Image (cartoon, rainbow, N blue to C red; front, side, top):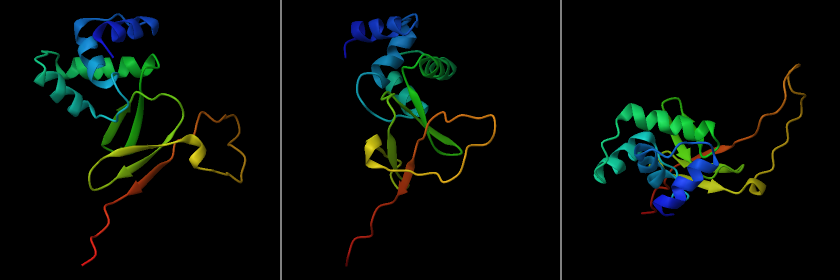
Length: 137
C-alpha cells in the first residue's frame, strides 16, 4: 500500500493524515501482520521518523477507535495491533511471541448458559496458546 493509499484510508475513517500518522500507518496498515507498539516504534525510527513514543501510542489508539486496527491481548502486559479488523481468532506462540490468524469458521464455540442480565454479546475472540515442540532425539 502506498503512502497516498494509506492517507486515503485514514481520511475514509475520519483521521487527519499527519506525517506521524502516515509513518505509523505505513508500518501497520500496509500488510496483514501482528505488531506491538515497541516494534512499530523501532521500525519507524529505522526509517528516520522522529515520532515520539507517546505519539505512536496515541496514533495506535486513534486507529483502533476509528476501526482501522484492533488489539489482540495475549497476556496482561503484551498486546499486538492487527490491521485485519474482521472477526477472527489467533494462535499465540509462547516461545516466539508470534501470532497467527485462525479463520472465524475454524473454531466452533458453544456457551451453555445465558449472558448476565442487562448485557449483550460484543464479540468472541479466541487466542490459543502454543509453544514450540521439542525436537525428537
